[in-house]
Structure formats: C-alpha cells, structure tokens
Image (cartoon, rainbow, N blue to C red):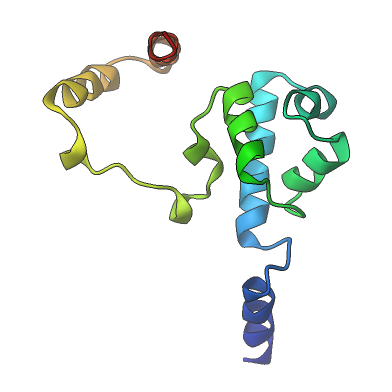
Length: 128
C-alpha cells in the first residue's frame, strides 16, 4: 500500500517519467522512425534541442502544446496520435456523417498498402 501511495503521489506531483510520458515518448519515437528522421533532424524541425527530443522520447519530459503541433505537422500525424489510448479522444460513430461512414466502409475493404495511399490523398486534399 505504501508503494502504491508513493507512485500516486509522484504522478499527482507531475513527476516524470510516468506511464503517460513513457507511452507518449514511445509514440513520438515510433512516428519519427516511420518518417525516417534522425533525432537531430526532427529536433531542428520542431525548434527544440536534440537532448530535449531525446528526453521526450524517453518519457522524461512532456512536450508543450506548440511542440505537439510541430510534431504532428512534421510527422504527418494528428495531434491525438501522440496521446496514449486512455487519453486519446475517441470519435463516436454517431458523430460521423453518412458520407464519412461510407468512406470508412470502403476503406476497410482495402489492403493496408492501399489504405496508406488513400490516407495520403485525403491529407493532401485537406491541406488545399
């Protein structure tokens, strides 16, 4: 019980690393590696030092809001991607339009390679 209380106190005090920052760091690292960036390259693109990016990836530091925006932009991910599952906003199927639902139905019929292509096209269209 003492151990549990100690862990809860550290989480409440904002001590890092914790489960949230560790998982967020894993997601940042995964997205960076998928994009083919080194830590140094990505750090330059998000206006941070490489050591700061390393601390984020190791769960020792939480990115601030502007850093999350730069990460999302440079790694071509939605901001919600970087939040671990229990903290990620879920989209309720009821909030989708009929057209959005139809897009999802067709997307599920595609293989992963084609889904990646469709997502790239949708991203490009959304940036017009």
